[in-house]
Length: 421
Image 1 (tube, rainbow, N blue to C red):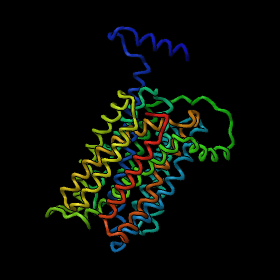
Image 2: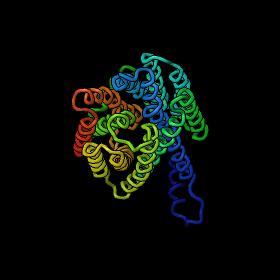
Image 3: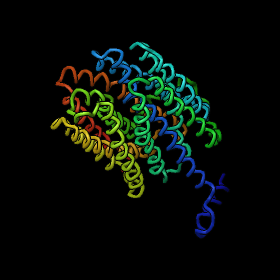
Image 4: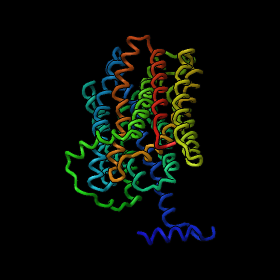
C-alpha cells in the first residue's frame, strides 16, 4: 500500500497533461454515487414524512390528525434511533458496508409497500416503524463510507456531495409524493420504495469495496457498551448536542408543515395546502442545495467549521420568527428561503466537523451511528413536543418560537467544541 501512495504522490507532481491518478478518478465516482445514494434516502424520508404520511393520517382520522401524526412519527423515530447505531455496529463487525446498503434498500421497498396498504392508525404506526428501521440500516452503512474512504482534506467536498442529497431528495420526493395525492397514496409509497431499492443496487454495483482491515475481536456486549463511551469524548459530545438541538428545532416545524399551511397560514385563493407544500419544498431545497455546496467548499478553503455552523443555527432561528410576526403566504416563502440556506450549510459543514472529532477511526460506523441518534432522536421528541406546544401553548405561532429558541441553543453548543476551529 505504501507503494501506491508513493506512486500517487509522484503522479501529482507531473504536468497537467498527464492523466489523473486512479485514486482521484475513483473518489470522483464515489462522491457522485454518494450524492445519488443520499438523494434517494431523502426522497423517502421527506416524500413520506412531509406529504404521504400526513395525508394518510388525516384521511383515517381528520379530527385528531395533529396528535395522531405525533404518535406515528414519534414512535417510528424510536425504531430509527435504535436501528441506526445497531446497524452501524454490525457493519463495523462485518468490515463491510455494501451488503447493508443493499439489504436496507430492498427491505425498505417491502416496508413501504406494506405501509401504503394499511388502513388504521395502529397499522400505519407499525408500517412506518418498519420503514424507519430498514432505512436506517441503509443510512448507517452509507454514512460510514465518508470516514472510511475519503481523505480528510476532501471531507468538506464529500460532505457537500452528501448534503446535496437533502435538497435534491426533498424536491424530488415531495414532487413525486404530491403527484399521488389524494387518491393514489399507495402508489406513491411503491414508487418511492422502488427508487431506494434501485439506487441501493446501483451504488453497490458501481462502488466496489474491499473488506476493511480486521480489528481486534471485541464482544458484542462490549461493543454495545461502547456506544455510551463515545459520548465521553468532549468534542464529540458537544457536536452530538449541537446536531440534536438543530434537528429538534427544525423538524418540530417541518414535520407539521402541511398542517401549518392548512390551519395557520392565510393562503392565496385557489392554492391548496398540498400545492403550497409542492411550491415551498423546491424553494427551500434549491436554497439548501446552493448553501450545501458553498458552505462545504468554503469551509475547506478557509479551514474553519464552527463559524458556519453557528451562523446557520442563528439564521434558522430568525427565519422561524417571521411567520409568527406575519402568518402569510409571503412569510412562509421567506421562512423557506432562510431555513433552506441555513440548514443546507449546517448539514454540509457539520458533517465534515463530525468526521474530525470521531472518537475512534476503527469504529467509524458505530460512532456515526451514535451521532445519527442526534438525527433520529429529535424526530422522536419533535412530534410529541409539537403536538403539546400547538395544543397547550398557543398554536403554531408558539411552535415557531420554541423551534427558534432550540436552534439558538444548538449554536451555543457547537461553540464549545475545542478540537476544531
